[in-house]
Length: 389
Image (tube, rainbow, N blue to C red; front, side):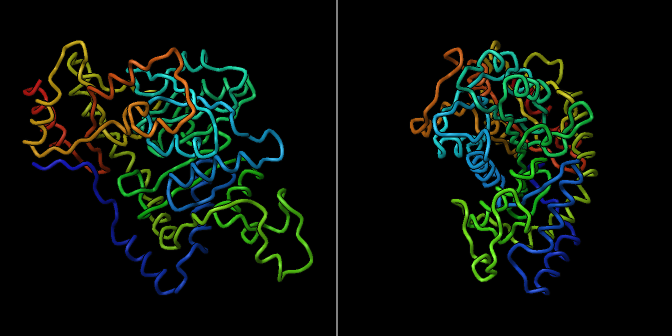
């Protein structure tokens, strides 16, 4: 039995959406992108959505926007608290904008940043907390929101792995001043490539819209907190007010995303049914550390950490998974401090070490979850791991 890491979630609806865009002969962002922005924001109960070409670009544009706010703008050298485990593009925009990173260890029981250590790590130079919910499991976003409100910090929620998860009857991706999502192939919904920024702040929304397309004013309404429109429409059509990028999404991606969003509740329901079986089989077994749910996970995948105290041979486990045709990979990006690229960062490590992130890096892996029944695959996984361990 083959057990894949990722699977397509498209049906005839997505193909038909592509064909409608082809028939329209409008390929760069247009009406479908605008409608997806509105529908995705409404789904989350947030005022503004800004679509870009990837979740990575969403992080880049979001960080850039905070450097151009009229009040409380970030500046080079400001400190940002980050979890030791996340994907690379959680960190790269922070480095690219000259921010100083303070790495905080994770809780091995959830794989998310330790809220206790996070509170300890706040210093007089801290300006922002980077919140990441790992692989569908909500981080302590409520605690982080309270810390940010108490200390006057920005909360930037990188929700690229955890779309449709919930904490306290509130969806993840709604706790921050800026919240980002990914629509990559293996994620909860897929638009080929794509990402989204959500915010309730009008100024941030307008900054993001300008920065995603050259830093111009063309995509902004006549009444904007960023600029005053001049009399010459000839000039206004190509007026640049910010250092920007071109990270616009395709109109096809917007059209596909609208169809995928309709299916998201059903996708999440199936993922959670698979998660319930996984938990029944693996929870309570001392050989395996599987994340304790905080709130309601949207279960991107099934992460497993082999209990470091039992000295299980991970290479033997990996060999067994290969032989059983079960695909697996490192948990997100592992401990980011263990990657070569860290030499380019200005950073420090809270408490001087990240032992839990190291344990997940050295003893962990994940297998896929998909929005359809995986009972056979999960039971197969359990048999293989039970024998190998």
